[in-house]
Amino acid sequence: MVIYADVIFAINFVSAYIMLYILGKIINRVTPKKKRLLLASAFGAISSVAVFCMESPAWCMYTIRIISVFAMIFIAFFEFRKRLIHQFAWFLMLCGILMISMTFIAGMLGKTVGIVSKAGVLYFDISPGVFLLSFAGAYGVMILFIKLFKNRKNKRYYRMTVTHNNKSVSVTALFDSGNLLKEPITGKPVSILEWEKAKMLFNNNYVFSDLGNHIEEMKLWLIPFNSLGNPSGMLFGFLADSIYIPEEKKTIDKTFIAVYESRLSKNEEYHALINAGLL
Image 1 (cartoon, helix red, strand yellow):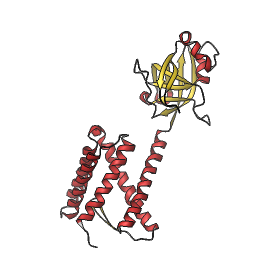
Image 2 (cartoon, one colour; image 1 turned 90 degrees about the vertical axis):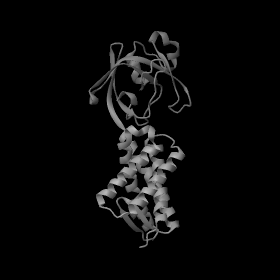
Image 3 (tube, one colour; image 1 turned 120 degrees about the vertical axis):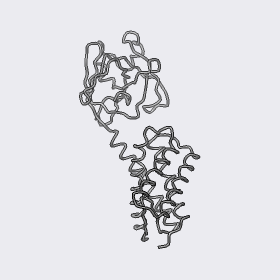
């Protein structure tokens, strides 16, 4: 098999750019800067060519390759440098998914893929058309894998006991990694509880629509939000005496609870959302 340096550069440049883009958008949740992505991808592609062309002990080539991957991530996401190891692990996982997916998809297209690997640098002996089709399919697989993994990881249920006015109510709560709601004056995190459960903590039996007429009596706060299916709005909330999460053996004093009129879960798996800042 004849190996061309320019093909190595092109394959690794495109692969690095796409994987860094995914890393930024889905893992770091930022929009990557194109100039940084281009610079990082070019650095990675050049180092890949260097590793492929050099004749050195395997440990030396692997060391150069590992350093180059760290450098790529550092260049692309300097502001997330404290999470470098986490991003490195995700990058390696994406590399593995890319190689397996491209090989499988090319095989489904009836094409034989010649793969040469040297210190983690891949060379595909494949036509440009099949490469693009395989790469597009592999990109979809990577996105699907990350979303499934993150959804599975983030879907954590806890038993949460809310205490207020010398009364307590215990509910099943979902840890909501996307709930970063804060009360704007104090900056305290805000968890969410269905009103049907929350009203057990008050010495009345008001329906949700009456809360606006009893704000002072119930010592309610108005908390602005832009989620829960609405572009913006206000939630009624109260400063709970405490919440207790037994699985974490954690008690949080004086934390905000916003009340929600409807069901949080259609199948009633949970009745509260724990703010991401509390765990």
